[in-house]
Length: 123
Image (cartoon, rainbow, N blue to C red; front, side):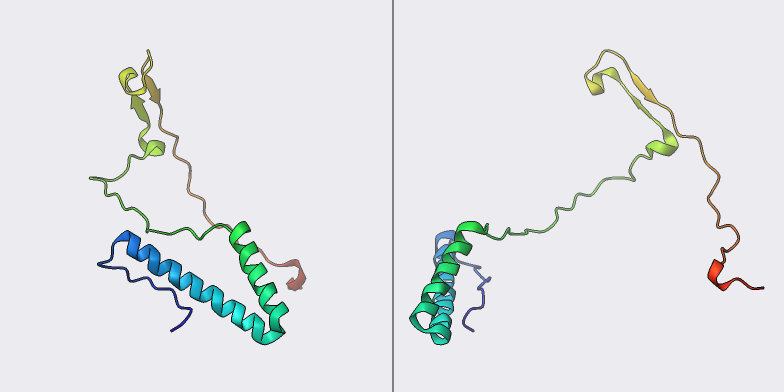
């Protein structure tokens, strides 16, 4: 279908894939200019070409998203709040060891009695 991006470049060299992308881009631009000519004649084609040029100048190319890298750890992460942390001087590049105490446990937050809306107060 004209105007649809081609994303299947499997088996092609990067140079060939770039040529196909550029050809598809040129075809889209030509379709835009032809549509401008249909609507407004020669001035419409000129305005469509101007809009394409301004878009290419001022809009950055879309970023390619190659996915989120996934890294698996051998165990659970260290809970600094519950266990605290101790760092040796050699680990942090300093002259003294650093010890961070664990946080005190707080009482759990429980929902109190249900608040009533003043507007719907029972009398």
